[in-house]
Image (tube, rainbow, N blue to C red; front, side, top):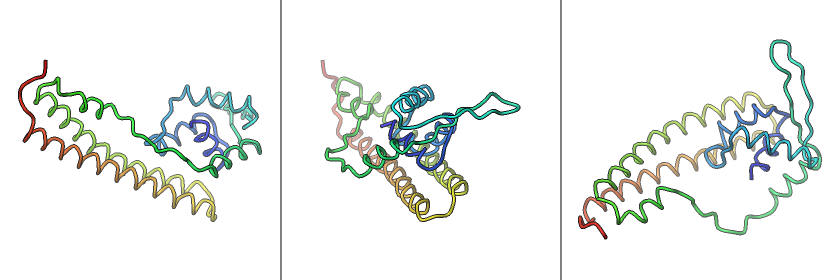
Length: 192
C-alpha cells in the first residue's frame, strides 16, 4: 500500500523523499503511515520497476536533492489500482482490543487504568488530529493550482479528515461505555 500512497502523492507533483515523508505525516499517516527508511526503500524499488524516475537537483547551501517524478507506467498502475474495487472487508487491527479481549486475567483496576489512559490519549489525539489535518489541508491547498482535479482532491481529503474525527469520537464513546460496563459488572475474582 505504501507504493500506492507514494504514487498518489507523486501524481500531484514531483517530490523528494523528505517531502513525501512530510506529506504522509500530515495526511495519510492517520490511516497509512511509513517510516523514512520505508519510503526510501520503496522509492528505489518503484524507480527500478520504471514507475518513477529521479533527478538530482543541485543546491548551493545544502546537499543535492533527489526529486522523484511519476512515469506514465506509474500513473497507469496508480489509476488501475484506483479503478479496481476493494472486494474484501477491511478489518481493524488494534492492540487495545486484543488486550481488553483477554483481560479477564487482570485485576479490575488494572483494566480500568488502561482504559482511562486510552480515553485520555484518544481525546488528545482527536484534538491534535483535527487541528493538524485542517492545517495540512490548508497548506496543501495553497501549494497546488486551482483546478477541478485539485478541488475534487480537497473535497475527498476533507471527507477522509472527517472520518478520522468520527473515528476518534467513536473510540472515546466506546471507551466510556466499556469503562462504565466494567465498573458496574466486572466480578472481582481473578481467573486462575
